[in-house]
Image (cartoon, rainbow, N blue to C red):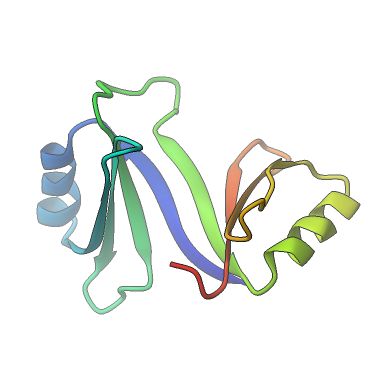
Length: 123
């Protein structure tokens, strides 16, 4: 298993980039715009440590988050997503979004933290 990133939802791209890039010194490593899903993903990392990313997720039209909804998930890449999910289910955990496409699954920790599992070799 390999740690990938932590996702935080943002309500204003410019303000967030000012904070994370100008304020903290992170650099944009990549960006994905999904017109159909109406969201933008912006990945940032410290210079020289590009594998330690934070994912800023901007849902188009969203005007703010309350009650901690801005924290999204932790992400891990796994070598066999089906085996990992089966192992977790055998331990009694519920897979909230099964890997029906062989790429991505979501499970929650006992403290209700969302964990994204991504199949190695994809994206």
